[in-house]
Structures are given as structure tokens and as C-alpha cells.
Length: 136
Ligand SMILES: [Zn+2]
Image (cartoon, rainbow, N blue to C red; front, side, top):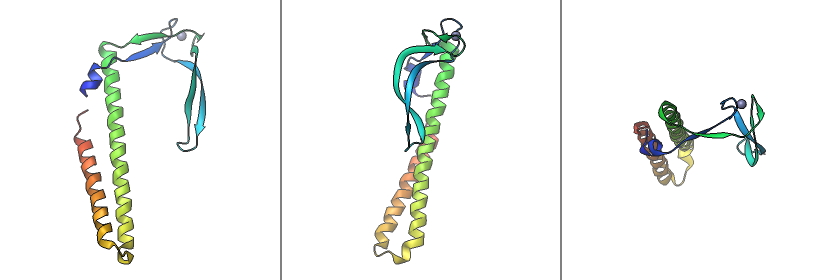
């Protein structure tokens, strides 16, 4: 777990009637064709609880085991994001290497392309190695 995560105050929102956390804000969303996902647009003042209906929300500052559990979930999520980034770079380097192998004989700048491909591999491997050894 990083030092930043240990110091940062974290909150949850809960229903003041039932204490549940199945709560939310009225909001709008727009479909983003690039990400192929619905993304948050505007957030309005009206709030609700799945079980109680329209209600205000309590902000709960997490402490103790609940805070620790959320820090661990955040750290795991961040580690997954770093691994995903490293994997994306490795895939891009692999695609570049495959392209180079398929086209090497016809490349007038073969040597330059070789060094470019090799550097992409070295950078991707270094990033993946750093990611794998990063303490969460
Ligand atoms: Zn409720």
C-alpha cells in the first residue's frame, strides 16, 4: 500500500434512514462511441436510496477496518491498472516486432527500423518489470 493511500481520507455515502449504501444522485449520461460506454454528464441535487426512495445522503468518513479494506481495494485496482498499461505496451511492442519481421526484407531503412523496434521492446519490458516489482 502506498503512503498516499494511507493518509488520504475516504468517504462513503449512506442512506440516513436504513444506513444502506445503495444510494445515488440523479444525473444525466451521454454515450461515448470511442469508449463504447455511457459516461456521466451532469449530476443533480436530488439523491435517492434503492430501498427508501428519495432521501438526503449522509457522508461517512471511513475509519478502522472499513478504511483499511477500501485502501486495499484501491491499491488492488491501481495495481491492475498499472499491469494493464504494461500489457498494452508489451502488446504494441509485439505488434511492431511482428510487423518488422514480416516486412524486414523490403524495408530500405531496415537498420533504423530494427533499432526502433528493439527500443520499443526494451521500454515495454522495463515498464513491465517495474510494474511487477512495484509495491502496492
Ligand atoms: Zn435507505
